[in-house]
Image (cartoon, rainbow, N blue to C red; front, side):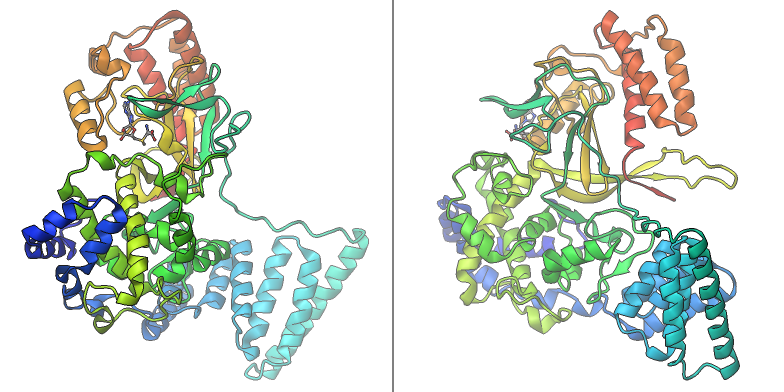
Length: 629
Ligand SMILES: C[S@@+](CC[C@H](N)C(=O)[O-])C[C@H]1O[C@@H](n2cnc3c(N)ncnc32)[C@H](O)[C@@H]1O
């Protein structure tokens, strides 16, 4: 939950800590529920009188800005004239972030020019739906017709040319001769298209090509109790390790064992205008939020889902979240609330301590609530610190309109914020929703995942292979309730990557029936000394690691012996060559064969085995989210 020192939260904690006397601390220490902790802390003068409005610099928050939008649009037009289409696209998109929806029509022209016809059609549909001026409509309907022609959707193109002729009637500012020429051209196109259609026997138009992110599928069947997990894996329990995953049958390297959507996911502030706020992927052609200049979406669908849930509340408080210096975990703890209304949580809270039974669903908040939080082992200071953080988060909820049920419609001003105290009419909400947020903060400490994408270099001119090598960049934080049930090993048997909004967990080794299917929380035995691994896991995840490499003191990879077995050398070389050419599927097959040969002859650890696991891992990561830089 660490805070960034540039924000004001550190100062807030220091001031509140300094204002709490021994009586208040003692009273707080005796409280036994999260709800009581938050309710008590929020009732104290230290919180109620804290002048938050004076600390926050609302005037620095970005706002919609029509003038800036106009300048960017003009810049885009200038770029078009110079033939700088990429630059024009970027400027039109930026213009829309500043003032929606000024540039859809212009951007559709640039998209059409660079050959992104389906995307141009989407922008044309958007600008017409938003009431594009009647006297200019002929331009976009004609563009629509031309895009459809390229896409061979001739029946739709006929309708679009007919619309163009009608729209030209309203083109009051168009010179008469130009208008007549456009009508004549459209009529000629209609004649040709109709004749062509009759000759071809009036075939149906091809379906629009929808560029949806890939939807990976589990290998084999789902586990009946944990639908996001394959039936090759079950969830076991032991007193010392809690829940953990084991193989129900022999699992082959390469099998997909978990495919899960997050319960909640939050994009880092710095990626908010380059990546989709909802599906967390890089947006080539962003769609701006109509109401704020803070975020973009990759599609109308993502915008719609976000606006109908969390973004309606978060729209105008995002700059405050980002400027506060709070961590992604804190934002995630808040998002878990904003994606549902408060009535839902008041209802859930009535019976929250009873563990849900039946099918384990990733979208059920109760499953998150019952993830490991180590609440019993927490110090009072830890709980106090998290409760202080919660007091800020419940204030954000009040400002967002979450408690009143009426989402905030305008950017924040200092006078709206006043103090950190929440209005007394929301006392019950502070106790119930605040109590859940305090629990979220504890759960997320051990169960949230970093979402990353691979930044790959753009292929050079003449190259047609994307090399999936480069930096792995942290773009978001998310919680995946089923994946959160997997324990750690310093010698993990799986690799994790992200495909669209999904996390994918894949076996990177052959796993025997009954063996644990372990994730990795950070330190790997091949590169990190045992003492360091143990210390890191203890500090971050509060457990003593007893995996095989820790128990048996396995050496680092440089101390391993290198062995080759039968054809492994040749297969490895073939695999590496395929990887170089971007043929990751082919390369994976070779590496999987190598592992099979090793597994039938020797017992790890040895260097060649782990080098092969590492190569296989790289091939799998190439299937995940990436962006070209
Ligand atoms: C993400 S959860 C894993 C699932 C958890 N065991 C459960 O019951 O829900 C992380 C927590 O699990 C426990 N854990 C993870 N790996 C472990 C291991 N190798 N040995 C013992 N406990 C472990 C620790 O308590 C850790 O904080």
